[in-house]
Image 1 (cartoon, rainbow, N blue to C red):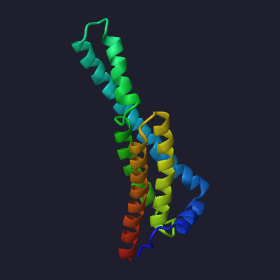
Image 2: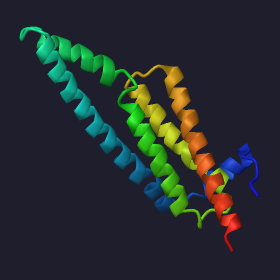
Image 3: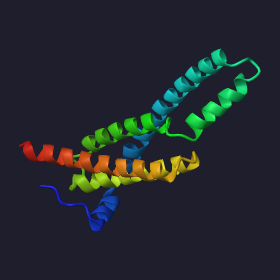
Image 4: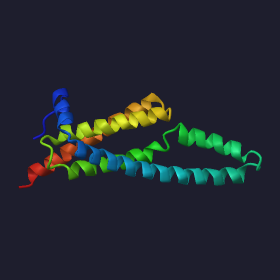
Length: 160
């Protein structure tokens, strides 16, 4: 069965992460999720420009467009929500792919979730997102990693 995640087990999980596995488990989801976020951001920017161009006179279009993009994409959560969703799904997938290599999947998943949370904290800090949102996203990433580990661990326990 699963053991509760404590600080010692989490530190052991961090120590057991191999460099190549860590790069693959972290780099693939981060790159793919940021590509998804970039595509979503371009779509929103295009929609905003169309909306602003039809609602304002030509001399105010650039100013209004910049203020909307600044508020919604550069300092808001609109860009992070699809990215965090994709990152969570890819994190679950990576834990499932690497489930045979870890001895305690719940701590392994929580450790990977903590690494993703650290990367997201740094990215959100650079975009000046409010701290409450940053902490919520960090908690989500750690919880998703732990839950994925628990899910795959219970799946492996029921299989012969």
